[in-house]
Image 1 (cartoon, rainbow over the protein chains, first blue to last red):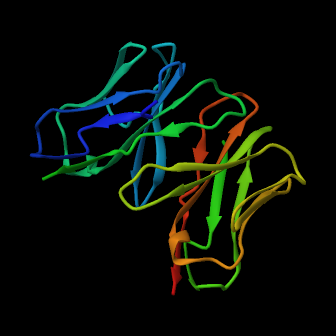
Image 2: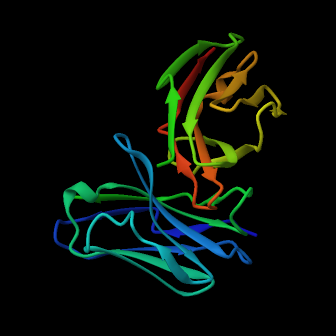
Image 3: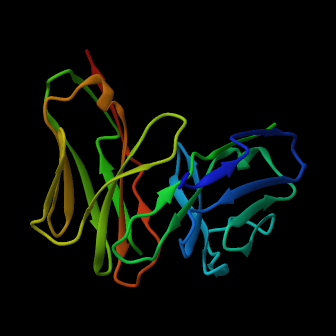
Length: 114
Length: 110
């Protein structure tokens, strides 16, 4: 398996624009997580899905953020409208099941909002 | 609320100089403690999972240990290629997603 695949790797956008980040989890993994990483706050969980259903979105910072998982092999994280403080690295991770198993991370999308 | 604190924030070692990284945690029933390595521009890469106090795991120059309140990542005779950020995370008995510390940035100088 190629691992968790994220696109794009880098995104530069202007404030106010819509941004869509994409993720393909590892085949067979039931859980998908979106994390955001900044120097100040480290890795923060935004939202996670189990079998394509959102379980906990309490980490989503504002209504400007939304996430979907239309099928087992694809998820999106959308920011509309984007703001400079959204600049961070966004990671997607997947897990075959929770419990004692580890999550596998993608390479991340570095978002810069100017 | 589950919390993970890692220290030091940054560590600079000479090649061959052994040391330890610390991960202190508070969690409502530990389901697992995880160590990851993260290289610049890449996603975290899984290293170890520890499940109970007293457990130890080794991989090359790295050894992870666990007590009821903290975990250590011991690095023996490090090499420059060990330079990375090391992240610690916990999962509680409620089976919630991993909660991460902010990491320790390790630099090993030849």
